Image (cartoon, rainbow, N blue to C red; front, top):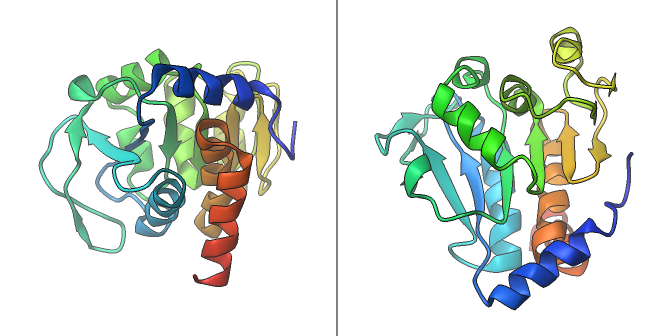
Length: 203
């Protein structure tokens, strides 16, 4: 369940190439989202797919405050987003409240088959959308009991876990693992690993 993603990524990457379109990864944002985790995810996608590789989404385009007090304006509404190639779900102190948003839950449920990477409390977004059934999940230790209540097959606290097209990680810099997982399935493992190396080296 952990380590290198399965060959599903080859098929997904091939489908994008056949369509001849620029793949876009959707990143739901909400009040209290972690700007660290959000920034890591956006950076990885930008290094792989260039400008416009991600779209931040919300039920409204009104500006939100991140966990650190920064102002962020979502790019697009859920309903206006073209079908994404993957999803990245950063955590943050507002995740529990955001996870109860019926529009977000419906959005995540309708795209559950896509590559998904969730870091920290972003795993709660998957849980409340009922997309973790039968999955082995990682994430913060403090969420273990909550995750057990959402039909998972196993919880591995404080670990990064890959189960099929889903990757769940602890909070903070571990978001890099979730971002590389999704980027690898969308743009290919070589591009994703190169992005990780560039971020780790500061280049």
